Image (cartoon, rainbow, N blue to C red; front, top):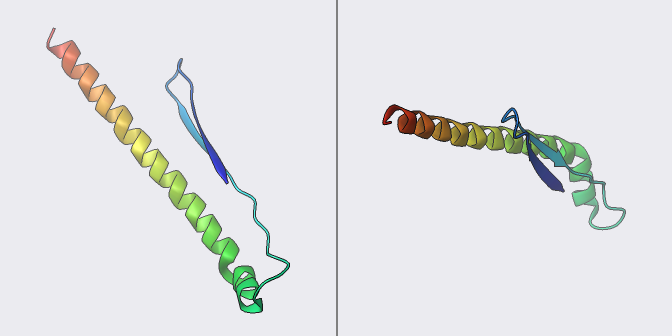
Length: 77
């Protein structure tokens, strides 16, 4: 799994990309392979969605902090 955060300096837009590849193991305990087939993919997708939401919240919070700081410095001039 890897991720990328892209920011366009001209617009300030930010994009988060998450890439992951997985497959069921060919060997190992049968109960684990079966469990992965039953719930593994669902759990993975949930993790990816939560990760994207968290990065979005953190990015929005940072952008808001910067916006407020810029507005405060402009107002104090």
